[in-house]
Image (cartoon, rainbow, N blue to C red; front, side, top):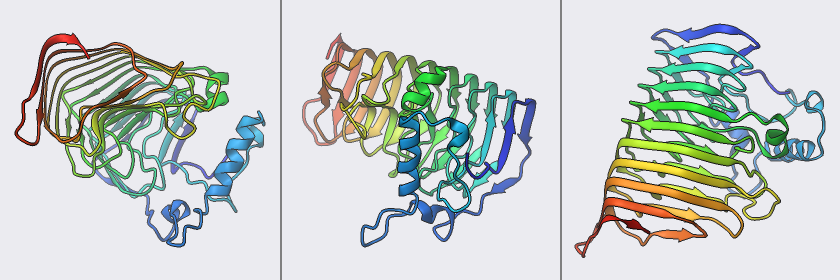
Length: 336
């Protein structure tokens, strides 16, 4: 219970936000964004005590209706959040300067996000975050964000397991990803699982884009993420890796709910400039398995690949070209 999202719907059907205008949240480092800003003398952001209090309430199982923040606290709202809704259309608008996340449907279904331009560079300014949603289409959008361009979620820790609704059947196509922590990201709040995600015909390129496809979880989040397919994606520049699977995120291995990522296929991906193709950080007991990279060319590689505690990773007709003129790695077919 917090400040309302700027546009909010609860248990509604057949709703839309459309047009060719601009929705301006007015956020800046002078107001909303300042709540999450670290000061030069390393004093924690003003939101930190509230974040810790909220997480503690969730860990103790405090009923949601009793987790009341809002006035006098420093937790920022999202811009547009349909909650427990059906048949949602967001089309054509430009969204700028949101306090936090931009488009955040929760426990909703049959969602179309089309032709949006999202430009916002505040902290945690994700572009579109379906959370425990199904049957979602995100297409022909431009994301230029201060955090993940698209982040697919399904609840955090015990709350996510209690509700137990996965995000599933999501298509992302013909989108452009500029600045952001990741182009398409799954997590870190995927405690209710995530499956059947399709990404195709997208362009990702910026000196401020960190990864193309990113998975993040840990032993407190847990969750099973499976059946993820990416094809026909052109990557210009990213600053960490084309594919990141990070199970050491935040709490890392400290927890009782081992995460799983499996059945991942990436094909017809090209990149011009990235430090490495893979950054895969697992831990003993967690599952990272059945990853196939097919018909891809990755150029401009400057660092060795990082893979730990992973199962089968198969390369089929993959070429890796270092930035410096040395022998390239080209594989017709085989495991890594």
